[in-house]
Image (cartoon, rainbow, N blue to C red):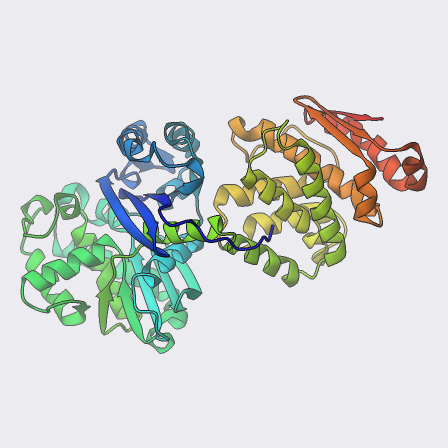
Length: 501
């Protein structure tokens, strides 16, 4: 819910952890004189994507990832959990059994693991890159080659205007075209052609007519730039000629283990050929002549996004406002439900242990509860839930969108055994309580004035919610009273006894 922006105090320490398909990247930073200064950075090759078989993470990949997090956690133990953000990308997006990793990972770190959609990953990458470059008016293309996906963003200053994520990455392509580290011209050409096919799908919207400079933000591009500079082909940056020279040089090797160049880390050897093939395809399809690189990437973007949230400059609020405006729902009714939700939540937050994040999500669910009426008034809750789960909502994680969709879909009608199937079992009790509050807030939208609700006394325990209105209130609001009495059985199925005094 919108609040007045308050500066994050100098000296505040924040942390962001990028659980990438190839490597895990941790940054710990301190706010000094209004700027963010890194004080620790760690990176460890985990290769979750290498353990992704048939959209199932292997036990070995899960174990590697959790062992890494146990080491990283030593740096995080003194940081407030509210100032830590952990995000999973392509491998965790793809994995059907992601909870086998995310739930124990969350227990280790003491904070939620947010798995983000591809376009949200792209937005965060752009935010990290934009803060590492000059704040000028030049439009730019940012490309980030990851282990399982590659993100493409066109933007200006700190605002992205186009974002896309394609399923091509240096780990997945290494497995497909350079098995067991074997290098061949045939394998390289196959990787290059396949990458060209993938990138061609976005060529019209992302080619050189739409930007003034190209920036590579990933470790892959930085490794390519380092090799090019060491060979003396360019002082900095990347161009087509230097990429071609590097391709010819590395194809002289028969195996990745033979690539032993100064400046190329051991973890990059196995994926560098795939990275070059993807880079050359991107240059070709998007008509890139030359590219500079940036040290800013997803983890830096997470830090800046976290600063915005802590200062109540949350991009999620903008996303919800745009969604409500786009689908032209009844704004007065939406605000009534949002206000009612906030009021109820404030009454029970301590008893039901609702966090600030839970309260925010409930408020947004209230505002969006009827956006589905733009599709059809019949079963509008189902349409509203679908929109929340499937629209691009910058700032929201996949789990947050699934929870919003689940709450809004369940705001009315029967409660079934499958209504919470998208929510992790460990979070279902709290989600059920949140749904109780939203269902009641929707009932209260028939009350003409929000002030009329403040005559109610609300008390909650772990299994009970008690509402006490003055007797004349029930007489003055017969429709709401009828709805409240009818709501008891369905709310009971959520594990809460509704008592009306």
